[in-house]
Image 1 (cartoon, helix red, strand yellow):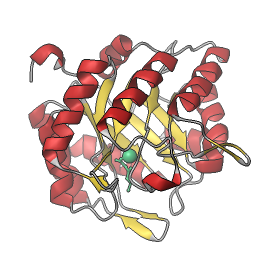
Image 2 (cartoon, rainbow, N blue to C red):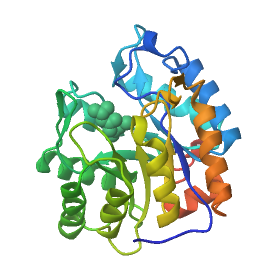
Image 3 (tube, rainbow, N blue to C red):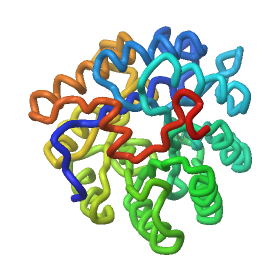
Image 4 (cartoon, rainbow, N blue to C red):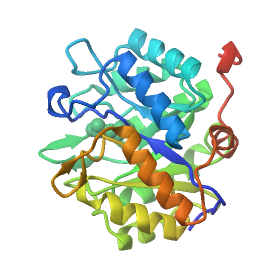
Length: 284
Ligand code: KMH
Ligand code: ZN
């Protein structure tokens, strides 16, 4: 089931594109809010941040200047590995999603297939995946392969066969489970999908909503890494809204420590993922 490491990479996905800013007061929708969240989550044990940004009205945005400012601010204010979402919102055009890479993050998400997404469709046709992947190779950005369903794992293997290794040479995937329309967030799904990953790959998983804890526990047991955050989970326990993103990272860090695979430092995450060092203007 891929490579197992002695520590746990904790990714925080603090915002997403789906929750309205008014529906969750702790959702970071401004740059200041995102930076404060990133710092609190780093202190709690996160090593990588998966970023979606919003505009001045709190609506999802792929504005390039805003993305560049965000990458610069999080890079300067934290040691976190900075990952930009190329998934955006289900309404975003494909070309705008590819242009996200011009902000030169350390890493980007790359979803390996189309999936029903509640009553919407999250579109990721094969040709789009290939174009996005080739652009990550050209720009030396490490892709994180987002897998919402079993067929996405097969598509990832096909992509690697046809297009070669990702920038940095290391394959890291993230199972996003429990989306209405995708694979359910269960221990069976975690194990089945992880088994299909290419040899040597590392992987994390996140369970949306009520599947958060079952997926996290199964993932730790199977040797995977954890993604948590308000993009995926707004309820901490039945009837109790999440206080903030740091609370979810703290819980993940506690679980990882109990599993004797404590949180990985961001330096170790950089080494594991083999991201290009773009801090201090190096390699920009
Ligand atoms: N917001 C979803 C439609 C990603 O960030 O790459 C897609 C998503 C995946 O969140
Ligand atoms: Zn996302």
